Amino acid sequence: MIEKSSHYFARGNTARGAHFLYKSAFDWLNQIFVLTGPQGTGKSTVIRSLADNLLEKGQHVQCFHSPLRPDELDGIIATELKVGIVDGRVCEGIPKNEAGEIVAINFGEALDNSRIFPEHLGTIEELRGQLVDAYSKAYETFLTALRIHDEWEKYYIENMDFMKADQISQELIQELYAGHENDTPTIGRHLFFGAATPKGAFDFIQSLTAQLERRIFIKGRPGSGKSTLLKKLAAAAEKNGIEVQVYHCGFDPNSLDMLIFPKLSTAIFDSNAPHEYFPDRDGDEILDMYTLTMAPGTDEAFAAEIAAIKERYSAKMKEATAHLALAEDIDSQIKAFYVAATNFSIVEELRLQLQSKLNELLAP
Image (tube, rainbow, N blue to C red; front, side, top):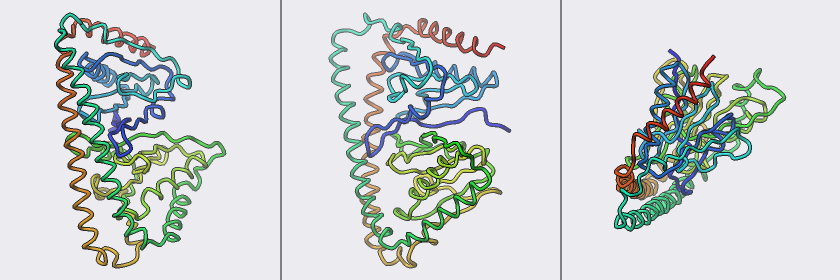
């Protein structure tokens, strides 16, 4: 069975702040509809409806989920049509020149401002300030957790055989790419497979890799060269003209967590907490960077120090997640004011307009 939808994130709540990958995700499209207007004016619901309709018509749909509420969509791409639809509030980085036509659809038209009373405006403004503060505290706490993670990595970096790690990367490059190279370099497509959410880490690894023939599960400890390996593989793929999807870490977007090579039907990914999986079918294999590159006994030699670091790290991650949960609650309070003031018959008219545009593109 061929999957007719793919699921990603293109924004993340990270240790580097709010991070957006929409430019890379959307820059190959012919047309992008950007839905403007405040939260609560029906944008995500309309995007979901349009996605469902496209799927019913046999179209492949790429779904971009909200890291604040992963069951909601920030945007979609109708793959065969090369058309994107995205919530303008969350799509920082959408290319303005390289892409094709950008069409703004104003969902603010559905807002009846007379239903937002003067006393509400002050409350909304106050809540917006609280929302910025909750996000800022989440990002600051994630950054503190990252610094603790750096302490954790140090023990393994100091006991790592870097020549062996480089040998592993070169052997993988040869094994994966031999016979598939061409003279035209490519540019990888950058995405997130997961995100830090108000309920903790969430990912789409299993669905993204379900149809692939080969999956390489990288095991190892922090600092055992997993992200560096992936960066070397990605750079070599681009240089050798091999299509690659580059998945950044939702905690630290400067690190990589997965590569997918669609034409090789292969994925290689960091399979450790918080996205820990194990081989469960033919074509699955483990690449254990700890066993292959680390001085024997490293875990045991620093067990007490590492256990203390892990405890501090876990506490900070829980604290950051709590700040995101507060952000979701505040956002919901703001949203409620706009939901109450929205004329959803106008939202339905806007949905029908968008559906009509898609139907025109689908017509033979």
